[in-house]
Image (cartoon, rainbow, N blue to C red; front, top):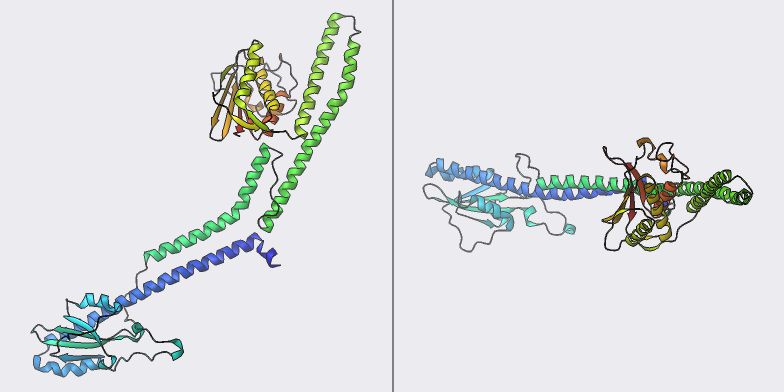
Amino acid sequence: MLKKLLGAMSVRIFLITVIGILLTATVVSMLGQRDSRVNESRLRDQFAFDRIESMIRILEITDAEKRSQIQDVFKRMGSSLKLGATPPKDAPALPAELENLHALLVPEIADFISITPQTRCSSRNRPPAPPPPDFGPTPPHLQGYCLAVYTHLQDHTPVLIQLRYGGHRPPPGHPPERNPLAIVLALLGLISIIWVVASVATQPLRKLANAALQLARNIENPPLPENQGSTEVRHAAKAFNEMQRSILKHVQERGFILGAIAHDLQTPLTRLRLRLEKVKDPELKQSLVNDLTATQEMVREGLDFARLCSENIDKNRVDLAALATAVCDNFEEAGHTIHKTLPDQAITIMGSAHLLTRCLNNLLSNAINYAQSPTLTIQVKESRVLCVISDDGPGIPEQELDNVLEPFRRLEDSRSRHTGGTGLGLSIARMIIEKHGGNMTLTNKQAPASGLVVQIDLPLN
């Protein structure tokens, strides 16, 4: 039950948010407490400085014979006063908590400061009662110190002022300033929480989007793992994989139907060719043979298209540069000129040499039908191989650039009227490229130039 509950994305996001907020609040609280202690110590030091300075000023404006009379007043204020006292030679070292106070007092208004036993301080501000013994000894900075300040007046009269320091709440003053570090850490903590929550929430969506892009390029892309992630992610992966299986099944069924029809047509077409031999009229006979040959070509390409739809291809290491060179050489031996720009080094990809050869043959034959000298360029960019085949023919209308890649799609214009064809050449070429994990796009050359540009993008190795 607990595993199922923790598997939900909503619970995970909630727990991450709560834990992050608690950790951030803890860090900020620790920094705040540290800043509070620092500010409290500064206020206490400033209060002690002002108090000692006030007592010195009072003594200086008081007549020398009346100074002893105001000792009782200082005692009621929680301090004691002793005239004529000089600093001891063996005074104990000051604690670290009093270093800032020592820097404030000496030498501005005091000659020397030290700590004395608690019994020598006035009893008015006794420190609070210590905690029970179970809590251990009370730290000195909580008990407070009996501070002995040795100074002198303007008439060089030595004075010892004893007063209690610490052990009580700090005097009222201006509110402490916020530490910029604490504010920055708080903001960074909140930003980190938001970033983690957003990453956890959107990571499954990114994976799903990438899988959809891969599915658009290759219907046989490996399915998503169905046993990883939260409950909602697993359900989405199962639904996505079921959709992929349904689309693949539909495509395969279409290929099966097309293959079955094309296969069944071969037998009657063969009988028709035999019967055409009995036709006496040579002109009629040649016309019928041409039509029958075109029909058999369409059936053959239909079978090839059906096989590509329903079968996986066997991939091996193929040198695309050498393969393209061989294809261009074959066309040149047949009397066709192809302007090629191929790299000298090998370009190794994983694929089927037979299918890639057929793809290039289809595209170059298509270009030769509409231009006398097509151009073939192959180059490597990072981890991709870019292959561009262009011609200087009439091109294709912009609105038909995507439709012409559909099976049995032919354009009723000058580009296809006199060249024949089954309408499967570009479709087969595109399917071969997609079977290799790439994509093929068609564009027209920029005016005033004319011609079609076929761009092929394949993964390298």
